[in-house]
Length: 216
Image (tube, rainbow, N blue to C red; front, side, top):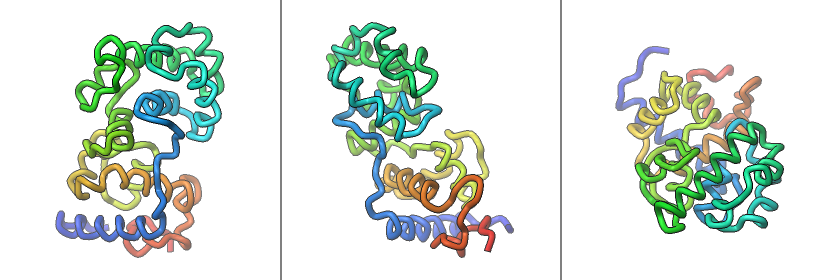
């Protein structure tokens, strides 16, 4: 595909967003949670596993440890047992306990609302911080770039980058700030419903005429 002008890419991006919004008007965060603390824990647990798996594990975890204070004082072994099926359970247990301790010791038990404060907590990178800020607090600090978002953004030629932070940088230059959180959900829904990694259903895709990678 010939290299597009920046203006053309921006115009196409807005068309893509509108089509995604029409197709997935109920797009939302798939991790079940109540409040920013639970969302943070669930997001840390979601690494290298599915949201469905996390949603199977968190009800019992939060029943036993409903607050940052509770989880901060939890036994590592007990937490490992509860989250075992999410994979990498030892490191994840260490991170979510550390996350809770950081909230208690540095923020009085309240999840902070800035990127700098969040990413200073154990287990929290930029992606997790964006999830918390956007979905728990309605703060559009950036775009959550998971495997779906990265893959589909490349297929749509919205970016040529592979590094998630570089993909995010490209996306925030194309889309209005107030759409950043929703954009991730829309692309994730599209990845789960139509644009499968192994066999994209281009013939069913409402964006096929805007996608340089469409196989139709």
